[in-house]
Length: 147
Image 1 (cartoon, helix red, strand yellow):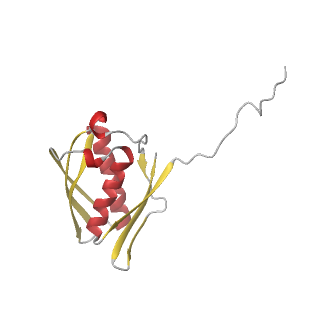
Image 2 (cartoon, rainbow, N blue to C red):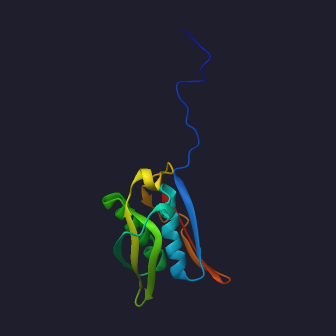
Image 3 (cartoon, one colour):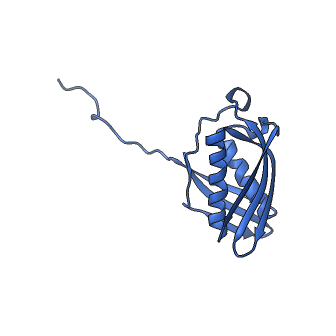
């Protein structure tokens, strides 16, 4: 028996990505802010206390690959260890034959009641629309994550 329904189903527009633009007076500060932006997509880093620390070291031949590995490592720490980043992050960027980040991250085990939940879960880092450049007197680090 016919009714007024428009069809059996319909596809709607939905974005499964988030574009992040992080800034810094130095490239190190921009990478730090890229990490904080990632954290704040899922929980409120301002509520995280720096009770524990993790050392992170990533290397790559170019800055784009370094950014990918940096964000990917942070995703791993949250997914595997439920390590929530506080706003205290010490980043040192080194340039040799390629690039390296040596970082000391402070935070604690994620607690939804304390740190909150924004409603977004980041699944993966991508190379889509990635950009790292000096703009006048500051650095821009841009990347897209899959949610």
